[in-house]
Length: 351
Image 1 (spheres, rainbow, N blue to C red):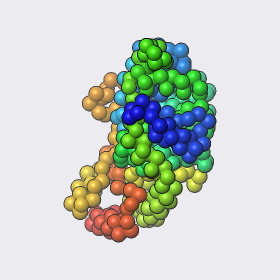
Image 2: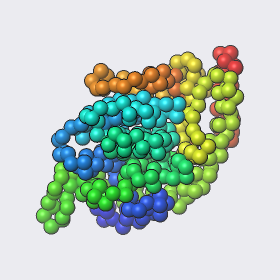
Image 3: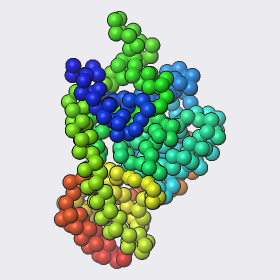
Image 4: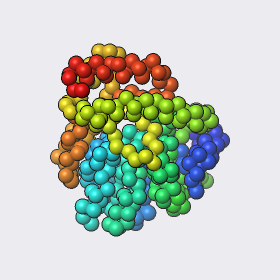
């Protein structure tokens, strides 16, 4: 009753289906990483490859390491690609791949969805599969649509740091019945029947617990209020940074007027290394961080895998600052943040 697709997990999945307008019921997992790992494996099997077979997967280096870890854990080979001024995968990177690349995994960085339509168009031209790692992007839309509504499989994370949370958890959303069925088996040890517990694939236990589903149901009931308040905070950030972006002091994430981004954090890119601002904010009890980073520079990945031209990634990786942004942020808190930032920028004579 607690861990085996119990009644509240089923209700939570039904609630997700209603909100996301998905054709098939979203599949809940214990976390977003396992949702991604299993979706990669299910798609790999759908393409006709075995569990241990390998091929190339195009993925932006400017992401969280978990994206690439899930690729490598599936015996696949990451090919690091660059981002554009939206900080998400540059669709042109797809046109540069050779025939060893069979999959591309765009990432919704900071909750901002990539150019779904162009990525889909180029992937179709190259004959490669597309999976979207939308871990922090629950509630984000492009042209008023969720990613799966354009025909692509995607995952979300419901970790405690995300705008929508179940404490720990995640889900996969797909409109492909074969992938959906494989995902259901994979999260339950790969079992396709229960009498003997027979398995057709080596799945890992990655089911969502009852308590997480209960928290998720509660947050679904208040999700529209969360989005409304979060939108108000985001608009304040946008207004504040307009003058600094216009003056060339910093850059913000470029998004189209028809994009809606839930913003797990609010990113800015400085003209200089970010350490100075991060330390200055810390001295004023404001927790800013570097998020995301360039995975191709991390110890395990450094120098091991193919890298396309990573000009933008290398240019911004040391200058990006992720500023705190959360639903319950008061006007006094944002005012304090903005005043502190003004002090820093004025002190450094950047405006």
